[in-house]
Amino acid sequence: MRITLIPIGKVDPAEIKMLEDPLKTEFSSDVTIGKKIPLPAAARNAARNQYDAEVMLEFLSLSGDSAGYDRALGVTDVDLYLPGVNFVFGLAGRRNAVISFHRLRQSFYGLPEDAELFQRRAVVEAVHEMGHTLGLAHCGDPRCVMRFSNTIAETDLKGPAFCTTCRPRVRTGGATGR
Ligand SMILES: [Zn+2]
Ligand SMILES: [Zn+2]
Image 1 (cartoon, rainbow, N blue to C red):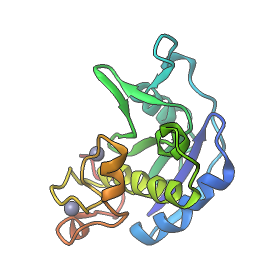
Image 2 (image 1 turned 90 degrees about the vertical axis):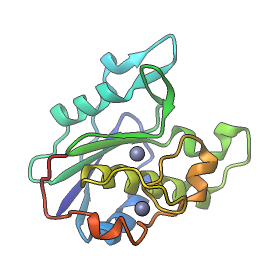
Image 3 (image 1 turned 180 degrees about the horizontal axis):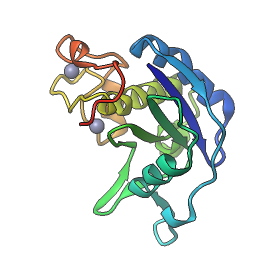
């Protein structure tokens, strides 16, 4: 399987780079970093100062250079939301997904920055959303990467790995259609 990581808007290249190896390992796949695409103006909600995750995902699928890849993961630093929801850490479609680094930084919570913790959170969110594109639903195991998380505390409770129930369900054989 081949995964491409696509920066959406301004994202620190080093922060995207650190997703490469964990995704390679977790999905036994090739992971490459694609060309950056701009933030879609249509996704921006000025009143909320956030971007609509659904619109971002659609934009990624249309304009991201994902030809030749099985999966594309858009990575952005802006805050994402869905109508009716305060925020989302990420969103997955059938083939592609987006994640936001915005709420993964300690500084967002008024705390001193912690690079290691940020990296762990970023990997957890990336594996979680990629897991959805590979056919996995949410899992009840609080330590499993597929556990739904609505707060950063829940994200920190789970690890970047699949539980023994989810692990064999990961279908890395290409397109699935969920
Ligand atoms: Zn989820
Ligand atoms: Zn699980």
